[in-house]
Length: 499
Image 1 (cartoon, rainbow, N blue to C red):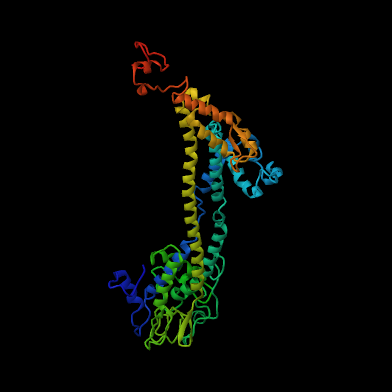
Image 2: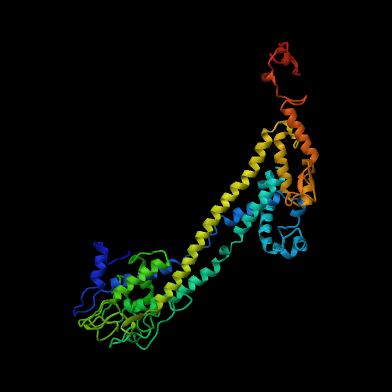
């Protein structure tokens, strides 16, 4: 729970912590629970770090959707092109390797091949899913659109962020371990920290910082909560140091003393998501906790733990007057500015920076997935539009694709879609397309003059200006004689066409 000094109201649990942590020190033995507030403040950081180790790689539907779009593109591609990509061969074994130097294939095909191979694998494993595309007979224009959508899908499929998880997770775990244990690996069961005495490693009698103070969270929590003598047990929690085997000297019983201290942290402090912002807030609260001056003389500062009496015996781990379970941190004063050295705090912030990268990665993945879903809708629209046109076009028009007036503009666009590629243009001859080598750049594949004239004739007939026209001009006739001159088949039951 964040605590701000500007708040007018503080909840009861927070008041209880402050009553333990910030109370004035009387000359008395240390009692069970006296270090509870310090324990909770430190546990908030430990919980945040350990809670971030359960990271899993979640790429969402990015590669799945991208691969399906690629498979759709392959399913409508020429058979000759499909054969260049093999579902069961890498780049060295693929036919396209020998072809990629030619002018028809871009030089980055080696980089793109894993995507197209994955698409071919999808096409191979689920042929029924793409059968409708193979039978759709898409126009050249639709195929070009599909190719562009597949290129966008490839860009998302190959997003570098998707491949960053293993290295980021390894970096996060190492940095968390460095903060918690002082090493890059989990150190729950080793006999560390070690030293000549508890006071030496945790905090000396003269107020000097412990030789290992701040080296790791594990070390400082053992100094704070581990029992040694004088019935100094349960000083942090009901199960901390509750058994004889939980007592801790300088190193001989570390695993048994550490286990209950670590295990009880989740019940004494919340677990926030590890981010730089959250950790900075927790570390700031920790520094506030240790900054209050302690001892009956009010001269000892930056101490983790409740000092007994004047604290003259240091962090010896005894419950008698002037001795206590605590950590004394090293401080330096330069030009009137005092700084405190806590190594694990710096390492924890490094871990939080890596956690931020993983969160940012997940945001990127979600954005890619959303964009690919929109691409997939665009892909689906292509086949539905074609199917709708086929269902609503009269049978007579299917044999005269480029001669109906409404088709001329569309046919010209279909020809232009092949741009300056003569090979693609030749495949459109049945649409009335011809390749004009001297034509306009980008439109050398154009509708033939014959097809244009046929369309013009059809337009004239459709407007009633030819003998095959279907639109009458009765409304323009002023007399019966004028009406009679209009050649039409006389409807049944009438004496003339216009009546």
